[in-house]
Image 1 (spheres, rainbow, N blue to C red):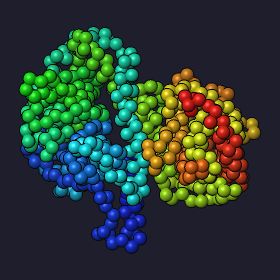
Image 2: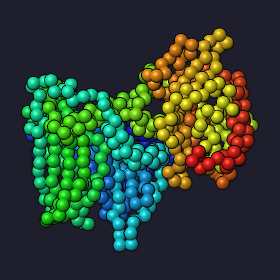
Image 3: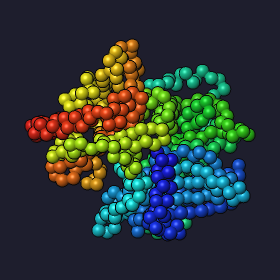
Image 4: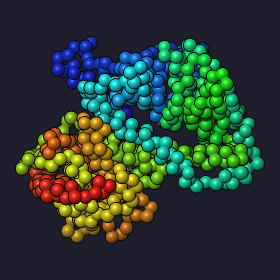
Length: 577
């Protein structure tokens, strides 16, 4: 997604220049902050590479306060994956901008790249999203001014920020549910190794005093400074397991549970929770106290380290023997988090050209799969180079051919309230009433109120061919605020209980769904999108070629269905809706 947004930004910069704006006056986001730092020996670790803790401090200080116009505290940081390390003498370029402001919080996107001054090369190091909260005044909460996106790329990030915020709010709950039910591997499988390193050998504890240079002008400790101290003890802990210099590869999403201030002492504790074949997870906890007061929990983070050989390839790591009771729990939970990381990496890195297009679904990857499902639809809807192919009876058909992928959009208006349209279209079982392509539709798994998996059966493409079936994940989203649409995103998933069978051709949907905009109280614009994969293309090729008008009949039928059934929703109990 980030690569696509980068492409959008480059196209938009050129477009602004072509519209008569001189190149030296091209548009720049007013919230954007850039920082360039040359890496000196004082910033480096024992390997002559930029300390990850120092980088985290720079990232944190770059991203905050410009938009808020007041002091902000770091509330959370999403998953960070460090692609490469940075050496002494190289230049770190950090670009940060606010993607969206909510009430008193805002999301900032942070892009870190490295520059070699001698070869004139630049490459990406990491990309992160951090949430900052404006500190309260005597009058109470601060209402941040809204971010107004001006370009297509900004509109994209603005829209996706709402989905990322939703994921943050449910992240802890989902992870806890997964960890509590995880039984993917028993501890006894690892205790057979005689050469396993006792986990207690990797335990590290350190105390840091918060001084004025570590805090902002509101005497709150910089989040980046706390992250830097946590990275330091985590690195020591990882070194004790492998007796080598480890490299930080990723940090899981974490939230700051409370602030710390000048005069606090921060107690930092780290231990290796589990060692996998080529990586290890280190758990770090930060607690604060002042005087004789009890410890306050500030933050807990999970960091993944590798040890690289001379060819920069990950080495095999020693096994670890967990401590009794809590150590066994941490050992098990680390296994669950590692599975989540692998699933997340697969989902996010999956390319459009890869076959199969479907991604395996299970509770561990539900959050990320749902996020990517909705994000893909938002990315497709944000494209501004759709071409109007034909129009009939107030139904418009648009096409978009890009990266060897044909996409189409069908757009119409109905005199039905947007929420009613959303409720009627979000249950795919009712689609049979207006779409002749949906011969059968059954619920397989009703994960929660936002995500449902269906099995859909469609007619054969040819007279003698087999009928097709699809296993579809439907992700529903209500608007985050009045400027957002209702969304129903669809994509194929695989389930072991529903493998392809000889009686059906198994089709796949990469990205499809509805975007529903409320234009007036009882007037709604409906846009249907689809990336025409091989399983879908035969159904719509004649329409796009102008040889058929089945699309218009289908969406005319959809409009009639919505009109006829809008009153039926009023009689349903609120819990059903």
